[in-house]
Amino acid sequence: MKQSKIPVVIMRGGTSKGIFIKAEDLPEDPALRDQIVLRVFGSPDVRQIDGLGGADPLTSKLAIIGKSAVPGADVDYTFGQVSYKAPTIDYSGNCGNISSAVGPYAVDEGLVPAVEPVTTVRVYNTNTQKILVEQVQVEDGRAKVDGDYAIAGVPGTGAEVVVDFSGTAGAATGKLLPTGNVVDTIETAAFGPIGASLVDAANPVVFVRAKDLGMTGIETPAQIDENKQLLDALEEIRGKGAVLMGLTSDWEAAAREIPAFPMVAVVAPAQGYKDFTTGKDIGEGDVDFVSRLMFMQVTHKTYAGTATTCTGAAARIEGTVVQEAMAAKGRGHEPGSLIRIGHPAGVIGLNVEAEKTAGGWALVKAEVNRTARRIMEGTCYYHV
Image 1 (cartoon, rainbow, N blue to C red):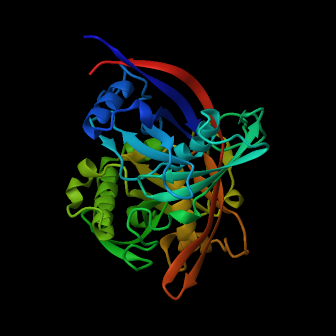
Image 2: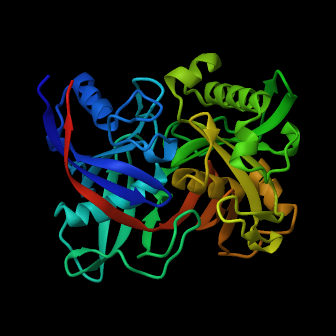
């Protein structure tokens, strides 16, 4: 069978890695486009041995980039979560970590004029139909790579990329609080009725208390992923939360139809634990609360960028289970304070503010700081 070829770039954005392809290099027909993308990644195959995918949810991500015709936007960006278990690509939400690499990619590809020392890139995310604003450091006409900014889950340091998600409230449902409630009740087979906060900012997330599931909140990814009863309960919670959000009508079909979004986050008050990747001690005073995030039916090894935005928003909304976990240790009361989320590999912080208005809660500020790096550019061969 004769092979075809397509230009690709592999980039790390935050704690994720993705394959970036220009929209102009892919066919307009969605079915043919996805067929090519699956071959580029080597999916479906749990090792993705015949493609470029990394055989992990955090490294099997797609970014399709092109010039934008949307007023106020520089580039269009479509995110795809490429499954390695099934021949599917989930376009139902965005990835905040991959988002942080879109600005640097746009600068390096000449999709926006390079302005030193900082180029502002306005990114229209087609998945959520929201605009992200990125501040990209530029040096010698290229996105700067070297810097002194460190993020948990990535070795070394790099040039800081600031991503403003404040315009992403109601990304999937149209509302910051999709049900209008700060806490809803979800019935579970294993744990009975539990309280859940359903919040939609950057991506929708279902937040639950660790104690309601018999968890401490500082489990390692392996401890969670090896507990089938807990995984089944978390997927039930995710599916039923998706129904309450109006994202599906059948919670049992959620794993098949919308496997990536909403995500589920388990939260607990601040406490000390060890970074599972390095063994480094993370003190109770280093975090405002702890969280473990479920993504694609497994535990996220760090924390998703969009989930960071949503978690920060939930922490600023009075009465949510996240705000409750933060307040349990007296955290988060200082105006303008950074919210620090303890995840399995360290701590991620963000500047986020929400305010109560006559029409409900509004997301006023949501800045997440990441680093990004171009790893490879070249030609990928595939056959369909």
